[in-house]
Length: 388
Image (cartoon, rainbow, N blue to C red):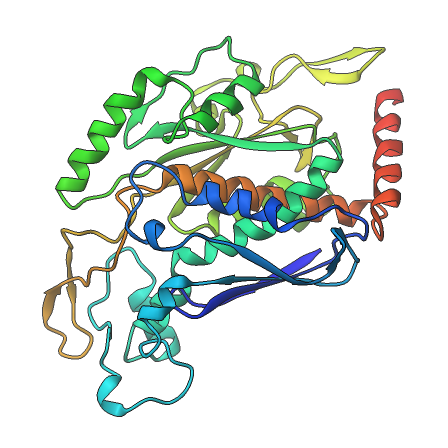
């Protein structure tokens, strides 16, 4: 399985092509739109979410509700393009209009300046438009397709926020994974402890009035992944490495950890490793899950626990200082429409990029021209693990 995305933030539409999905997978527009709608929610989002109501269009690879095994094409129309048709025109426009929405004051923390330096742009909007987080809408759409495949194999992916703008959310040890999923889905902050709702929302409101932004930590959990996905035989086949790369490719993500993650630096080996036990009905498992479901670059059969650190969004309504690339004079950075925080939405993106990596790994490891063959090979492999 492989995919490409294309499109600019304020262009006419976003596009994705996915190749390698087996034939016979039940897939509908509603499956994808459900995930896109989740991405647009969350307390602290900006005005663009009021403009866009993302609705995917499947233009190839699906017939009568089932995938064909051929490339799947997804398109997503940007409604806001109606207000940007001259700024983002494909055709040549009048020289006098080229200054419209021109960006010469790069924003600290964005790709604006470095992208302009690399590609030789005098208008940094050329960088901004593609580097925008708007592209993650297509990553979510692709992930929604991957999730449909994982659902057929009884693999579930969900997230919750554990640190919101510096506030650590206490998580009850008694919560089941299903309760974590349900409570986080019910919260527009994606948190599992409702006692923090008012405090965090008040914090967001205060930061918004200051023209500033907030980041945090998101934990994504995967249930049902069997032992042995990934491999230790080459560095680039280690699945935790692939997941880490995918998570860090999400806009504003600056760190990834598995299980206890960076806490392990303060612990001894006996406090970190997961003891192995065996039971006749289930085979091998671990007493604990401090390593987050990975050993040697492979899944070990435990739930996958993946944490992602999202920095505060770098577009500030109280902008930092920068330099105008035309005059080299100091200026306040340009201001583009933005969110105070996008943690809940980023959690949806994180879920879906992880789902995409897992689906890709499974399709590489098992016979997958059609769903019947995939399910049979997957079940046979699982039975072999239990009897090992």
